[in-house]
Length: 178
View 1 (cartoon, rainbow, N blue to C red):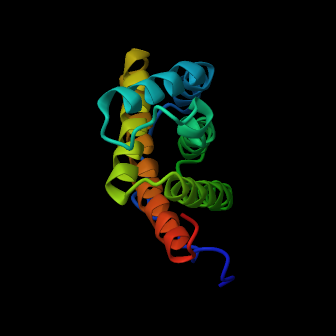
View 2 (view 1 turned 45 degrees about the horizontal axis):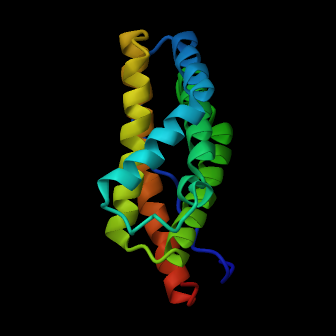
């Protein structure tokens, strides 16, 4: 393994069989989430600032707080659409997406380290993002099975993303990048 990166771990989020779901309904939800990306990210940042369970954000501009959120939301919608369409059998597509998510999560953890965050604050950060995406998904009042599928994908990916962000954080701390 290259010493400038954390070890690559396989994304284990989708080893379970993918349930049958209407792929078109999942794509519709994905498209609506992407079109509402700005609003989801704004609510995420507002909530982080308001709840105060992360470091004082008064001196940190929105681009730093929200960094990576737009991309991870888009990646989640792509993964959900691919999973629904292929019933989880497009391992090469899923592997590529998982690699993008892994790298993004590691960068997110390293950035949070540079901003002086702690591991519990990173956990809260990712949990807040997950909650905002789930809330936006449920608020769409779309097909119930497709909604449940998307919520499951969001939670699984962001649970893994949280673990990988912490790994990136630890690697950055060990390398003295804080």
